[in-house]
Image (cartoon, rainbow, N blue to C red; front, side, top):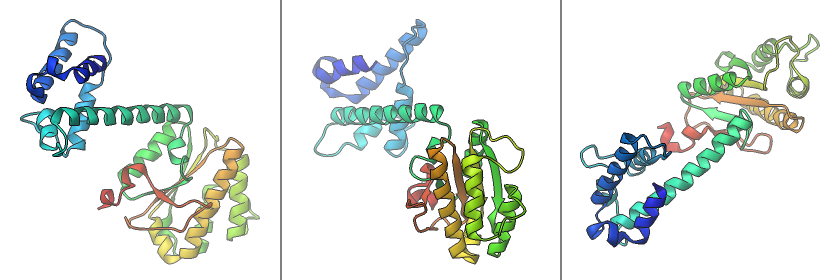
Length: 272
């Protein structure tokens, strides 16, 4: 199909009288029907492109389809056909990038939460749950901590020490946390649970702990980021997921990297 579209791009006057996108839409629909009726195994993703167009242009027009959407959004210095091919090229670049990312994710489980920083923020609970389930399905050991219950730094130390089975000599201070978490991240768990692909620390309601103990809350994430980087050098994985009820929460950089929102909520508009 893409080869066919390139022929149209080169000689639009031969294929499309008047350069009408509605003629092109009808032609492509007929093409898809034909290969389906004749059971021709030609992989293509033009339906995905149509859906992408609808989202890209603010919603697909149910009555007239993508041709009307493109025409309605064509700038004054272009034509609908030129705009169609510009959008097609943009879509194919996006699809190629997503395909590369998907392949990388399959080869390196959890890489989507490690490519920018090892600490990732979440606002919507359903996105956090999806991330947790996806990582568990790929073999990660999941440790979930309810940070909203921590009114003091001591509360945090008790919870983390219990969840990760820190030894009795754990000092319940930030230096001790750095040492014991480093052991877990780089060499293995203190308890007997299987390590799996890696370790995920998932904090819920972290904004409440940050409000109660702002310095400690930042240092904890900084320690995790540092130890995750050390673990990566040893070909081990430590990931931190941080849920906040405040969609505008910000932290100073951790592990010399900023704490960033997950990809679905990266833009401010997606947290409104």
